[in-house]
Length: 132
Ligand SMILES: CC(C)(COP(=O)(O)OP(=O)(O)OC[C@H]1O[C@@H](n2cnc3c(N)ncnc32)[C@H](O)[C@@H]1OP(=O)(O)O)[C@@H](O)C(=O)NCCC(=O)NCCS
Image (cartoon, rainbow, N blue to C red):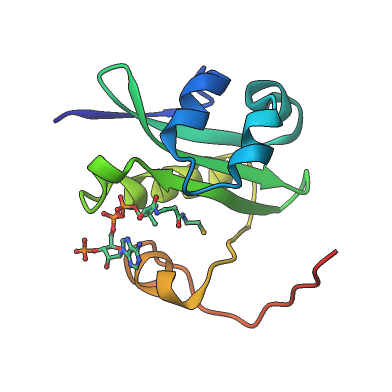
């Protein structure tokens, strides 16, 4: 299996919604025009493709200056545990650094510590959240 990682790769709503209904709120995901929203709002995104199939994705949003955040990290269920998720995040980190960002943030639940802290290299830090 040869996986290709691309920054700001073209993708469409059908393939992003097929990638992982279980990873996102399916209704909200289907209503979203992903390529338009990301092109207008995101610093960028990384895709992972097995041949032409979209098998991984991460979105990188930012404040226009030095802070970037990753969101919607997802790997297709039949492609997990092969380091694709780690490579997506490392690529997002590299692209954010190249764009001049100084900090990369992520929010995650405890059970993903081994992935974000152990594999991807994030430092755990206190954070806050308010439901709106
Ligand atoms: C989380 C996710 C992106 C990881 O992708 P992946 O390609 O399977 O991850 P990697 O193969 O790079 O994993 C590297 C290491 O991270 C850890 N890890 C990976 N997935 C994990 C998970 N779901 N929970 C806890 N630790 C995990 C493991 O230590 C793993 O090493 P190992 O395979 O030697 O045990 C994938 O499981 C996924 O898409 N999950 C559903 C969506 C989701 O929860 N996204 C996160 C939103 S914050």
